[in-house]
Image (cartoon, rainbow over all chains, first blue to last red; front, side):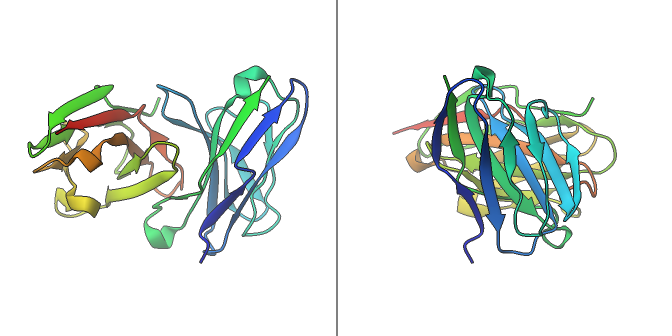
Length: 113
Length: 113
């Protein structure tokens, strides 16, 4: 099992550009989440999904879109990048069968200039 | 509002001494409790979790955590610290059946030889 994979590892964007961060898991987990990590603030939930076709907002959803067409994939779209979105982004998956222990991807470091 | 607090930004201990990293939470019901560790430029690794049962849970790398319901705390402990334990530690809480994690801001553990 590859677990949770994320691409790209690094990305630099200019203000106003759009892009999609990819996330995939091969553990057949129902739940998937996106977090952003900023110094001194821990990880904050952006969006999450409890199954294919079902998504909901987390703590900091503004400026981001998600969709979940399959169990395996949960892409995060930045509509119009802003410097405030410079962060490290982590995707995670979990399942009731694992007591909701979240398995994290390696992260994407995004810089918006 | 639901929240998790890690009151110490940094904990310094000498190698061989016991360590404690503190965590308190404000989440309704009986949430699941987790500790994760992050090494520099790496993703998050699961250490341990509390679901129900014995208040002392044992996890990876010799770590354990003590759950105290009356104080809504979940402190991470290790009897004898190693230099290699130096990392960033996150406490996280999952409100029941949500699949979401609420993180504390993180505590940097520095173990000196």
